[in-house]
Figure (cartoon, rainbow, N blue to C red):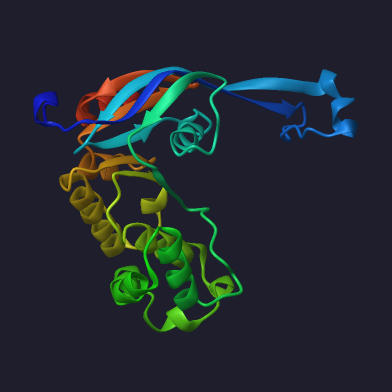
Length: 246
């Protein structure tokens, strides 16, 4: 898909830097009186360093890189959950961040979490009830939907989170590793749904270690390496360079 066939910009990142503080032990620094006495043990981690790009309507953008490269931190910044230390991020509408650790309420049944999750996405109660069956069917949880979420495996929980998140169209959807869960059939459904969202002129960011999912789902890839944007281009070109880099 060429730039001329793409829609308007949806996300613009301009020289984005994101820093956070940790102690030498690796724990995140807290802003309390006792901990401030340990300033000598605090170090600043530069998680994202000078990243710039423009994402447009109709793009599905894979985000790849080794563990700790800054991919998830960048997604949190795009979603408005992490403030840049320097630079700016513009989003044309509120991005929806879907991660495998997205919170649902363990004490409640899957059924109640579906309704609450739908309401949190901005559905009315009538819309939440209308989409309920489709969400459950997509998740494949069947009879387990009436059981408390705390009894679900991590894979079952992640499938339900994904099913809720994609139950409505998003202008900007950020998917962080959610396709790594579930069986082959569920991953195929998930990838098809992401392509559908993209074709509806949305913008999808997909953070994944699965190069197969990236190839099948995305028409552009960002490679983040040690917090920097190493490469931005067609999936095959970027994946080939990433693999060659080791």
